[in-house]
Length: 78
Image (cartoon, rainbow, N blue to C red; front, side, top):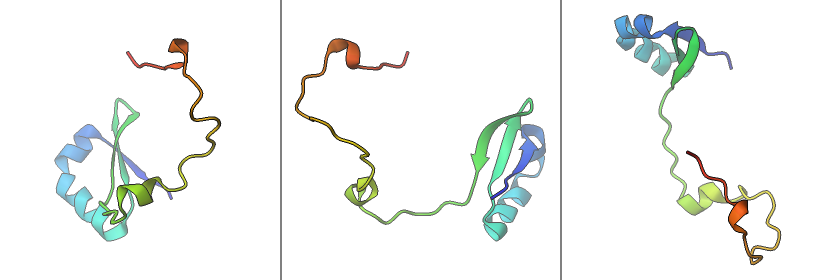
């Protein structure tokens, strides 16, 4: 699936046109900032599954869940 890329200034000038295009084609548009992808605009699709159903199958491996976790094992974002 190929997404069209447009600059922020192009998107601002023709936003309603792009929204209609996205609704009609179900294709996403990538909005760029200085040539780099910044935002993806795509059609909204409701997920009617419960939170547990959405998570089902997402755990790839669970080894010894009761093993203590050391202080150095935590990853934090700054």
